[in-house]
Picture (cartoon, rainbow, N blue to C red):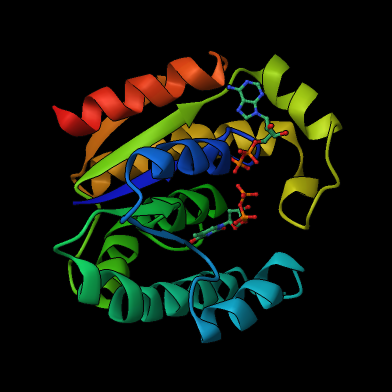
Length: 191
Ligand SMILES: Nc1ncnc2c1ncn2[C@@H]1O[C@H](COP(=O)(O)OP(=O)(O)O)[C@@H](O)[C@H]1O
Ligand SMILES: Cc1cn([C@H]2C[C@H](O)[C@@H](COP(=O)(O)OP(=O)(O)O)O2)c(=O)[nH]c1=O
């Protein structure tokens, strides 16, 4: 089973992946961007926000995704795969940019993924207050420097992206305790 954790920066994705992996010691733990050798180079390029063209940025994420699907997801598809982000992020960030039409966003992602998508998408949803608190506690990367309203728009777009990709969405209140959230996710995976 391939599942993805989604949510804006600081929503708690890595915290939950680390918790869930204790219950699934044989699971493949992975992430987008940057899980493969080429992906690590792409990740460095995109996170430093050097691309002047939003389309170039989108295509870099897409290249990372194509490599990730081929090298990590496809060979392990019969195992439990837990991914920090997925195509859902790719579509959501691009929806907010607004430069690529929806039909192309989905078509290009189908091309990169060979139509392989997470079976369930867990969305960790933050409030503005909690997001601003968590951002104030960390050093920000290029994308996070775009601010809290930008990230809240992304959060809405993550829901729209899941719908556009026709994937199963499980929304989770990310302001709950770490333990409560882990339990909610584990209960849902089993079900
Ligand atoms: N449920 C939670 N309640 C309070 N703080 C949390 C919770 N989950 C994560 N955090 C804290 O929020 C910050 C961001 O969490 P992290 O897991 O790195 O998020 P992400 O991977 O989504 O960017 C970390 O300092 C983490 O300890
Ligand atoms: C997968 C993906 C991520 N992103 C963004 C979301 C994040 O800001 C960044 C990935 O950074 P990362 O540090 O992995 O995320 P987080 O801070 O939540 O742990 O790239 C896109 O813009 N498009 C994409 O297709």
